[in-house]
Image: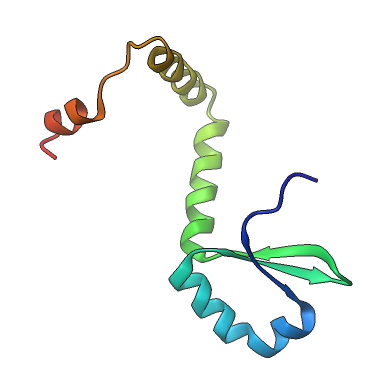
Length: 94
């Protein structure tokens, strides 16, 4: 198993007792809530906005053309051929 995300860890009993409070904390703090069952991680609850962003990112990374262009851009940056963020922002009027 890969490394667990940072977040609050709660057991099933605490989840049952404090679900409204935990959901409020998700929205405010943006951290995950890791649910344990029998002392072992079993599930993760995340804020809906974060979940949707992750799903969108997974779709983008599944597109071979997008992934290729992203990897090429990373290589350009490593080689010092990237464009400074300030320049991009200026071009976009930001």
